[in-house]
Image (cartoon, rainbow, N blue to C red; front, side):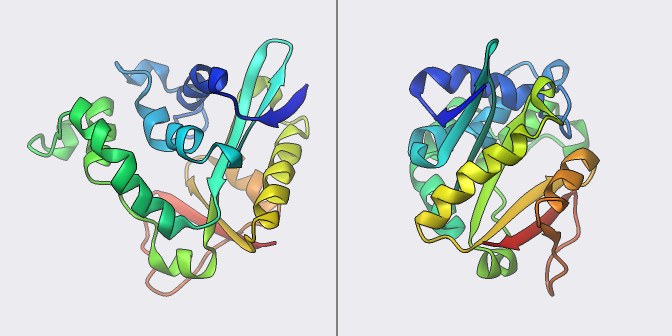
Length: 204
C-alpha cells in the first residue's frame, strides 16, 4: 500500500472512486447515466487545478482512495467560477426549468454545475482551508484514512493553513464518526444554515 502524489494517470480511477462513494459513502453508480458527474463536482478540479494538494492511496489492485483540498476556500471558489464551471456548463444543460422534485440524479448534479453553492462565509472565516477524502470499502477501517489525512495536513500546514473544514452528508454516519475521531467538531455558528450538509472544523 502506497500513499503518493496524484498523477494524471490516476484521474479515471478517482472518477470511479467518486461515483462508488457518492451516495452518502455508498455506491451511487445505479443512479447516474453519466458516471463522471460526481467527480466533475467534487474531485476533478482539484486534480487538474490544484494537484499539489491531492494525494492517492494505491494497493495491489490499484488506486482506491484520494484526498484533495485547498488552503483558501474563498479563493478556490472564485477560481472554480472562472476556470472550471464555464466549460462544464457548455457540456451540461441547465435543468432549472425542470421542477426540483422531478429532476433525475444527473439533472440535480447539472444544476449544481450551473448554480454552485458557496461554502457559508461564517465557516470560511474561521476555517479557511478545506478538504475532501474518499476511500473504497476495501481500504476502510484499516487506519489508512488517518494516514492519508495526515499526509494532506502535513503539506497543507506547510503551506500556511491553520484551520480546516469539511462538509459531510448528514446521512453518512460512518464519515461523521471518522472525522470526529480526527478532531473535527460539528460547527454550531450564528447564521449557519440547516441542511443536508454537516459542517465540521478543526485547527492545526
